[in-house]
Image 1 (cartoon, one colour):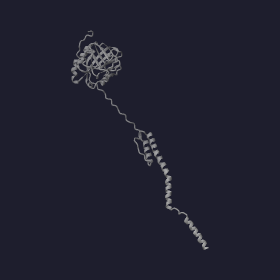
Image 2 (spheres, helix red, strand yellow):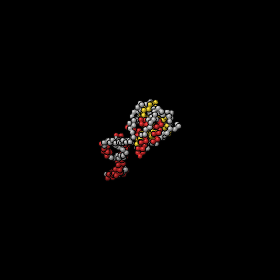
Image 3 (cartoon, rainbow, N blue to C red):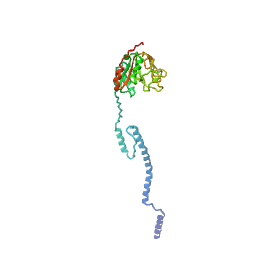
Length: 303
């Protein structure tokens, strides 16, 4: 019997030696950790890409919703979701501010002293023409060098009175239909043999409706002013912008290339009612020029 027990214990011992030893407990814990990492890694990738697309879409939504409040770019941290919501809530509570429009200050134009009341120019018309004058003559006093109601109807007298003050002078014509028109000319007006005079500082104007329209030189030519013993003309290039005969009784107006103007009067041909020539004089010479201009001359209308 002892032999039988010995053989049985030997067999059990051989079976135990042939079976592989079990792995240690420490290796099994490491293996479980690796399995957990491999299982959680796809989830971490998935959450990373979702957060990557989630926050730009949220920024785009708020940029569209609040285009004026959110200026510039901001870096979004995926871990700061609560702070971002508080920031967005603050944007929603921020009131809209309207931009202040710039205020335009219109300064009143102070007109210089005028020697005599004009029979043709109203105060508003004079004010509008004054702003169109070159800066060289603005601020000077207005002296009436010639007028038909004071000096008589004569083109030669108009030429002679223009010599009282050289420089820019304003010629104003009124017809019997109520139109007022004229132009800025260079004095003195000297009769020549069909030779134009003047500079590009000149212009022509019309005052049909009480608001003067000014036509400046176009640069097409230099036909500014043409003085003759038989007529006075402004502009040229096909037709005169303004034409006055030697007796200052009749005239005409048409489109000219010099100023690009339309007809200055109500009709192309007109009858003259009044003519005035205004000079822009320095204050120191004002009284002297004024006394010379007020000297009347006896002129026969039919001579």
